[in-house]
Length: 301
Image (cartoon, rainbow, N blue to C red; front, side, top):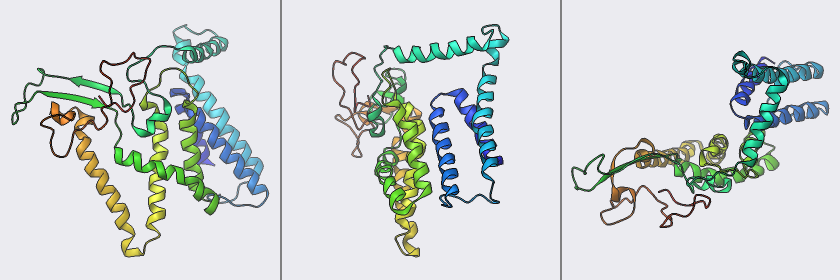
């Protein structure tokens, strides 16, 4: 029961920081309600509660943890607005929430690095956080070519792309093996990713970070399931190979994440590009660039 109270505290802090955590709050509430209903029919699914908790106590603590505590923390997070006189009553706070919702609902601003939600798992349009070009860094000492540095919110392609079939396979484990962990991961991914689809305002790939957590969990879950199909001496081989490739990708894309200066051909495919290829795999960028209202997908430039 103490874990539920701690969970409610974390959820309250999360909701106070970003409304998308409401999706996680709803999915957790659904799981707790489902377990309560199943326990009434003597059906066990998921980790056992030790010692068993009477249903009324379970409901009471659930309401405290998932309603009272998150609501209290959310209200407290707005204390500075009351302290400086911006809000006088709870009605002012409510009106501000409505205004914030309407602002995002009706926002029509565009951005050259905006991208639709469906494209995020495919790493189609990472956001450029930083860029500096010649002559700021001068010339490469070995090749004499101009240097440039960039920083993109590009995920590790190996981890992202291998996690996608793992996410797709989760319903199999839920239905065929009644896997509670698979159900938690699947619902977590859906609730952190699906709410972005109907949103019409400009969005960016970093909005995928909530769903990314469950993509990685799906990858780890499926890797364990596959590894268990091998005899004990070989079980670690699959995981070791996957992690080794991930480390290689990390080293390859390290300059993309840390703005290490590289020559122009090392960034984009051209004369003088190293035999291991450029850092910008997708360079399907129209020239001249289209209006910001038209997403430039599969363009890492």
